[in-house]
Length: 403
Image (cartoon, rainbow, N blue to C red):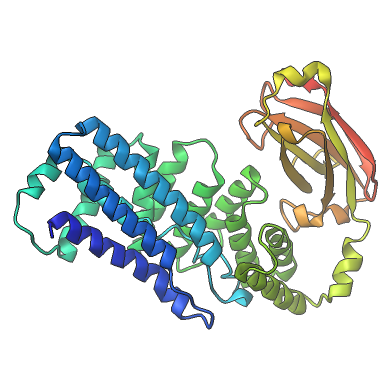
């Protein structure tokens, strides 16, 4: 077995152990078979690429492109798998918060650091097999960090470095890498949530302060981002603001199947939060009844050519006093129009500011080509209109372009 296989196997074991440890602590623990399989596939396919490079059937450039594409696919698959396999103690809000960090791609990240130079692979293949020590693995990570200092405009590298530091429990360095990442990409809820996660771990597993500020940014980008909702609920629960935790977790509950493990954990978390807040199920239902606005939103034919099917559509209610922060918001796409909508307390941007606290609100619909939560030139909008909370059958027509 070559040194390449040894380090690949070692990294696969590290990744599998990272998933397995928290899972075995749960009464319903399950083996991370798919994560291990993904890492095994990564190892095998990278070995094939290495062989093709040595045989001359792949150029160095072709090898590099194929390897990066392979890593991208495995990262996506493992991330999706983690979303369906998370286990934890729901009552403490760890439903999906800290455990959902994208830890598994450590193997891909370290291999990236080791294999970034194709010439080095050929040289290594000629060397006798040897064991890799923890110091050598640390050196590989340091090499990746050095590459990022030399090429700081590579967001993919910062993402991999952040995940690598996170799984190595070097949380402050992970947070610093994510900070560099979010500077270099458009607003992205996944990146912001990972940044908040790493920063929280760096400050003793506390989401208070800066991590929560970052989570609010993530939710402004994607109000339904499930990891951000989970962590925001955790932060509120841990400081005793159970009603706010309920608001976040009710929105999270809509994103997961009720009969899934995560769905059951969210339901259990909500039950405890409601008990601590002194809210019964009937009181919750009474509070929500009537505190909504609903209707349809459509794009005017004369302006339809200025929108693409994949453009983001925001429909939201805000206070009539001029405050710009939405009280409730839903996110659609142009291809969904015309569409029906319902705005209520479960879609609150900040659970402390709810639709049910207002008698009247201002209703807005906007098409954004960038997906930004703030109005930009070129956006398409429907004229804001004041409506009574509890109204239904409303109609919003998007017919104006922002200069």
